[in-house]
Every structure is written in structure tokens, then in C-alpha cells.
Amino acid sequence: MRAIGTDDPRAQVTLAGPQAEAPDQHAPVAGPGDLTEELLNSGWWSDAMVRAAGIPVADVPFVTVGGGIGSFVMADYLRIAGVPTEHIRVLSNSDSPWQAYEYLTRVSQIPGPERLRSDSASRPDNIWGFPSYALAEAVRERNVRPVWQVLVEPVLADYYTPRVGHVLAGLERETKRIGYHQMLAKGQVRMVRRRHGGGYFTVLTPRAGTTRTKRVAYRSQFVHLAVGYPGLKFLPELQAFRTEHRDFGHVVSAYEDHEHVYELARAKHAVVMLRGGGIVASRVLQRLMDDRARYQLSTEIVHLFRTYVSGSHGPNPWNRRKGGNGFAYQGFNYPKSVWGGQLKARMRRLEGDERARAYKLMGGTNTPRRRDWQAQLREGGAGGWYRALAGTVEEMRLEDGKVVSRVMTAQGPVAVTADFLVDCTGLEADIAEHRVLHDLLDSSGAGRNPLGRLDVERNFQVRGTRSGPGVIYASGAATLGGYFPGVDTFLGLQIAAQEITDDLAQRGFCRRIGPLRSTTQWLRWAANRRP
Ligand SMILES: Cc1cc2nc3c(=O)[nH]c(=O)nc-3n(C[C@H](O)[C@H](O)[C@H](O)COP(=O)(O)OP(=O)(O)OC[C@H]3O[C@@H](n4cnc5c(N)ncnc54)[C@H](O)[C@@H]3O)c2cc1C
Image 1 (tube, rainbow, N blue to C red):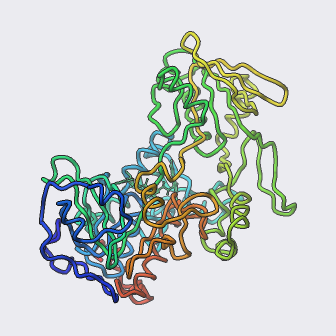
Image 2 (image 1 turned 60 degrees about the vertical axis):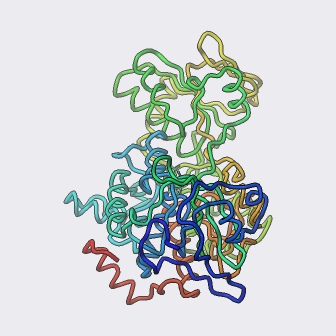
Image 3 (image 1 turned 90 degrees about the vertical axis):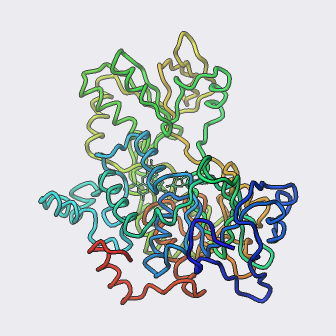
């Protein structure tokens, strides 16, 4: 049997182990096959079951599902650890690893020239973090300011953060260097099931017109899941409003394209109601305030916080989180030591409720304090065009083309009439809303962690899903709540990929990235040569 997408015989998977069933040499190369009742209802599939369904099988030792930044950094690590492109398949519905990220940052008001939230050394295109973004920017622009900012942050200056455009350009370069597109198989992943004899079948529905087959089953020893956010989460009253009025223009999520809000505010006087106190709320707020100043608009903003933070807060009297103007301030979404200090070590020891409590204490909704928009907020408050409210929305209706909300505050109900409501509260739906994760929970033995997400071990193996010598790993937002809180960040995805690579090196799948390999590979990175 030939592996689909490669002519290299080394791509044939070998499943070691006592009960390993040899890959079937008589499976069809291609066929019109589809999922059968038998396959849908079985947690374990045999080669014969897949063959009987007429689904073509492609053998490759390692597949990563998603093809976003998490899959990309995983593939990057493996390539640096000596794995050839033929042994890795990235199964994704995206053309590039940054497609989902670029879309989400653009619509949530962090377009290419803007700066994002993470720090100078969090480089998803460079596992060494050197040269940092600040150093690279200083050299490129012949300006020492970025390096100076890193030296004095956060006391004398805000944290240095890279521009989205530069992050994307770096990703593009690394994508080419590691041969990402040779590893990419385009389509929608439907499910991952355990295989009798060891390993897994990952079913991909190829993009229409790209193959003659309806499904392809990737038979692999290892699977890595990095499917990003399971979906948009709408608060129940927003969902009810949209369903009742069949109106998707007046009430929008900040994670949807909502450019029409800014366009209308440029054309006529508009009142915009914002919900949420996280980084996206602060970005949308800044866009509205910047447009107001740039185009001399009269836009009014009503900002609704569920919990209004008026000052420093937290249980620890000598180490309280700063806050003000409704927002809780924190440079990054967690304290920095989560990525490599005391908190990282401490979280690895916590289980159950204790871990859930630690997450609550460190995380929650927060945003970095940036000097520029603080001044705009003060101006808005003084000018009467920015008003903050604390409360919850009890009812929403559409009246004469406006959204009328009844907000319950501590002082009693308040009616707010706005042209638009921009919801900045929820990107993250329950993991079960993602079809592949749902299937994994239902049929492949996966469970939930103390925050309700996918339960992974310290080395990112998905608990309960072992199949002979086969392992499923997962990283990214779906695994938040595990032993490593920073997992949904560039650096966190890299830390997860490093743990997984170390585990795979112990299993003999790749080389260990020790000091010598690391140094020679960095030199290759610097020279833009293949790993
Ligand atoms: C607005 C915003 C800004 C952020 N800024 C930062 C920042 O500054 N610094 C930082 O460190 N982190 C940041 N993050 C967090 C995080 O680093 C990124 O979201 C990162 O892109 C997560 O990578 P991922 O691979 O887990 O998910 P994604 O990059 O979203 O990739 C998941 C991919 O899986 C695909 N997929 C899902 N299901 C299937 C399926 N069934 N079949 C095929 N493909 C599928 C999706 O289409 C997508 O391409 C930000 C997040 C957001 C939303």
C-alpha cells in the first residue's frame, strides 16, 4: 500500500509493541468509502473495518490536527529534532498556520501594524527566542528604542510587544524553511479513533475537488491535537436576541467581522455599547476612541462591566493586582513566572479543586495597562462621551433599529439605548462544541480537567487515550486547566511542543534537542537553511 500524499516508503508507519497488527498491505489506495454505522459506533477500529468501509488509508507516523500556530510550532520542533517532512502530516482546513490568528487579531482590532500582547522573546518562528523581537526590530529599523524599552519595562515604560505584521512575516519565513507545505494535507478532520493493535486513525474529509475520495484515514502512531478555540461563546441573552430578531448586525461579537460598526460611526452619530473588561474590550474601545479623535466624531460609548474593578485587588496584601477604570491590569494573561518560574513549578504539583482555585486567582479577565488609552479614557469621562456601568443585562430588544438593554446595576435598573452592542466577553465555548474533541470525549477515553477542558498529563499526553504504543498529545486552548496554565500563548505552545518532543525522543521517534543539536540548528535557522 502506498501512503497518500507521499511517495517515500519511510512514511509507512511501524507500530511496535506486543500486540501490534501489521498495516494491511491490501487496503485500497483510493475509494469512494465513507463512515459506516459500525465505524461510528466503535471506539476501536481495526484495519479490516476501515477497509470494509472503503476508506483509503494513508500511513504516516505523526499527524498534527489543526494547522494553526500550535501545529506549526509542533512541526517546527520535530523538524529541528531531525524528523523528515515525510513522517509528519499537518491536517488542517487552513492554508497557513497564521490564518486563524490573523483573522482573530484583525477583527478584534489588532491589525498588522498594531502591537500584540506577548513579550519580546515569545517568537513562535524561533524556538530559541533569540534574537528577540525587540532586538530584531532595533536592527531592522536602526533604532535602539525597542531594546531600551525591554531594559526598563515595565517600570519606566510599558512592556515591549511586537507588531502583528512582524510576527506573521517571521512565521512565513520559518514555514518555508521547515517545508511546512510539504507536510500539509488540507481538509476537515472529523474524528480520531483508537486502532486495534496500536496507534490511531484520524479521519480527514479532504477539501472538495482536491481528491477523488470522500474521506482519508490517516493511520499513525502519534496524534497531536491543536484545534484552537472550540467556537464563539455567546452569552445566553445575546444568543436569544440574535435568534429572536434574526439580526446579526446590531449585536456582534468582537471576534466576528464588525467593521460596519466603525463605518457607521464615521457616517453619523452613534452610541456603541461595549461588554467586557479583557484585552479585546480595551482594543475595541481604543479603536472607537482613536476614530473619534482622528475623524472628529461624536461617538458615545457605554461600557458595561460585569465586575467593575476600581483599584488594586486580590487576597495577598503584599502582592495585589493593579486595577482601575473597571479593568484588572496585568501585563500578560498570567503572571510571567507561569512560563518558567515559581508558578510553573507550583502548578505542576496541584490537582483538582486546588488547581482550579489557583487558575482563578492568577487569571480571570484582565488587560495590560497602556498609558495612551488611559489618557483617552479620562478625556472621555470628563467629556461625557464615555460612561462605564457595572451590572448585568436582564433584557434586550430591538426598537426602531436600536438595541435597548435593561441593565441591572447595584443602584437599580438602567435602560441603555445603543446603535450597536459589541460583545467582547467570549471566545471560548465548551470543548464539546468542537466535533473532534466531542468525539474524543465520547469515544476515545478522553476526560475533562478541573476547568472542564481536555485532561492532559504534564507532558501533554491526553489522559485515557493510549492505544498500544500510540499516544495522543494536545496543546492550546482546549487544554487550559492542566498543569501548565500558559498553554494558549505562543511561548506556551512552544513549551508544550518541547515537552512533547522530549517525550517522543524517549520513544525513539526523533532526536533529543541537546546543546550541540540546539546550537547547530540555531546556526541553520540564522542562515535560513533547512533544519
Ligand atoms: C485575538 C487574539 C490575540 C492573541 N494574541 C496573542 C499574543 O499576543 N501572544 C500570544 O502568545 N498569544 C496570543 N493569542 C493566543 C494564542 O497564542 C493564539 O490564539 C494561537 O493562534 C493559538 O494557536 P492554536 O494552534 O491553538 O489555535 P489556532 O491558531 O486558532 O489554530 C487552530 C487551527 O485548527 C483548525 N481546525 C480546527 N478544527 C479543525 C478540524 N476539525 N479540521 C481541520 N482543521 C481544524 C482551525 O481552522 C485553525 O486553523 C491570541 C489569541 C487571540 C484570539
